[in-house]
Figure 1 (spheres, rainbow, N blue to C red):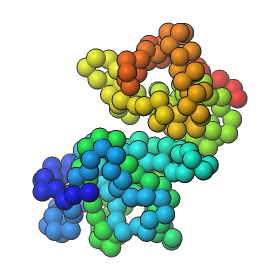
Figure 2 (figure 1 turned 180 degrees about the vertical axis):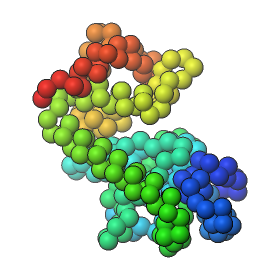
Figure 3 (figure 1 turned 135 degrees about the vertical axis):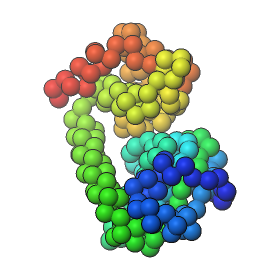
Length: 230
């Protein structure tokens, strides 16, 4: 990562947006902007936690080891999202890795200052508590889905989730180009199974594909697939 002198709009980063006006001068002194190239790693699984990241521009995948040579993508993050919060706790070790999927700019705060910000800015603390509650709910759903939902249902659920998070681009595709391998890692399936299921969905006119871009052509049926009893 390289330091970036780009300014902050005070709206994208959660800390800047929710802190007290009187706290802004302290933030201006303490925060750092870093630029990352596609493929750069912000932090690795097992690294000691030294700070927390807020995505200012670009997209990141958060993933962890799964078996010897596989990875499980825990989530995708975009502008305004927090990255590195899973390392906050008693051990202060990152349980996941964060990798840039495109050129990325991050706002970075060292943990001592971030903890001080939480003690002073109660609105920020409250929003972070709600964020952790949502993360816990989503993690529990993903654990249930990985254990019980068939691959086709997991794929339908993933595509709907990505559409809801990133929306559509001007051409009508989910505004997030995704490799088949990353899609497989996101739903916890092999590349071959994911490729086969995606082709089946294309044949059933549930989705359409152009390169790494996907659009949902029958969202109602996809919703039914992820809600089928399992």
